[in-house]
Amino acid sequence: MAREKKDERKKVCEKCGGMQFILTDEGPVPCECRKEELLKKRLKAASIPRRYENKTIETFVGNDKKRRQLRNDANAYVKGFPPPHGKKGILLIGTTGCGKTHLAIGILKAIIEKGYTGYYCNIIDFFRMLKESYVTDAAYEELDVLEKIASVDFLVLDDLGAEKPTEWKIDRLYTIVNRRYEENLPILVTTNKKDTEELKEHVGVRIVSRLYEMCQIIDSFPDEDYRMRGLDLSHHLSEKRTTSG
Image 1 (cartoon, rainbow, N blue to C red):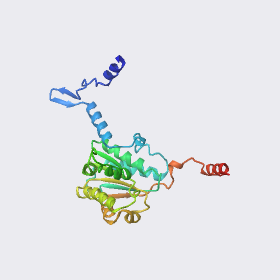
Image 2 (cartoon, rainbow, N blue to C red):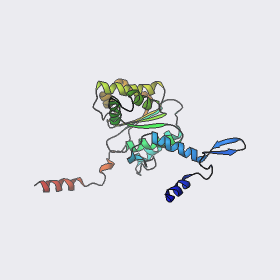
Image 3 (tube, rainbow, N blue to C red):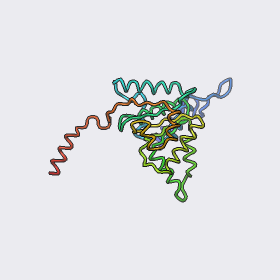
Image 4 (tube, helix red, strand yellow):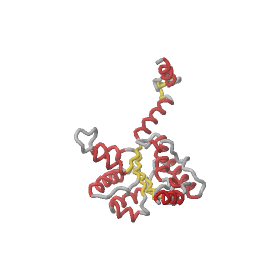
């Protein structure tokens, strides 16, 4: 118990004594610890998956020309956020495992660190949350989910096109995209579709048309699936055949 109390005392800011404000001749001013605490809250509210908590733009490693350019583009976007005019969002197009989610969350975290609100939403989880809201005695309603996702300063909509399209799903997607389109709010979308034409076939013209106007398209990701990097698949397949035989 004594050790727990000692640990608690260590957490109290020495500058402000835990008040989060410092008294000056001109009145109270926010302490640095308040900024840190607010940042922690914004990051927690962003629902960033645990696997990506330590991912940043800088940890998007690789010395090849494509990855260097992708890091440069990401840093330039964050530096200029919020974009003053023109295309305010980003559409990341690339194959599975090329690092789109990593880079998207790196951008999201960097924008949150600048003082803005943000939210990460995987498209499959988005529809799961909506369906859960229909259950009796659910902790939230569908409108709560839609409002939260539609109103943050910066939204990451990950893996668009991974869902099996239905009229109900397209309608909800349109609600989110159109709301941010009308409110001039930036959105970052990732997709495994090879181009906007293929994405259009999957989610419809209305959604892609708005994304095309809202977003700069970045499709220069390497084709390599970094999750498979270093795996000797031929060895595993040979081993499997030997075992089965």
